[in-house]
Amino acid sequence: MSLHLVPVRSRDANTFVAEHHRHHRPPQGQVFAVGAADRTGRLRAVAIVGRPVARHLDDGATLEVTRTCTDGAANANSLLYAAAWRATKALGYTRLLTYTQSGESGASLRGAGWRVLAQRRPRPGWHTASRPRTELGTEHVARTLWQAP
Image (cartoon, rainbow, N blue to C red; front, top):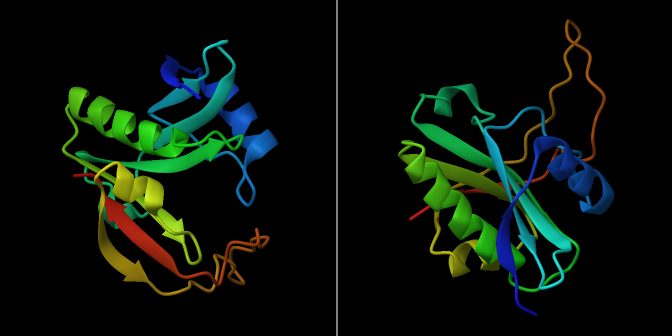
């Protein structure tokens, strides 16, 4: 299958994630999104890029791929990770990060030339007595931090 890059509106990227992502909801906010479509023009995958979720990484020069999602299209994520890095640089940013969860191979990231920066321990979640939060099912999972080439 041949895929090509297409522009994607925020609303459409979030709808795609809501329909196809296996463990996350659409992220809050974004700087830009990019899609991959097949020869018929059907959207097969999206990547959403925004400010880093971790405040200490939000230095004004760094962005984070906060979500990628496919409908199963082969090699779509590698295409999107590479495109996200090119777009990030074109916008004047100097660093692009993302995370994978334990159990995810990172093959798409390696295929796009990304490298592992760090292994992160599972976090206990965001719930505190003063700020109650509902668990989303992604807590207590180790993560790997990646950086674009």
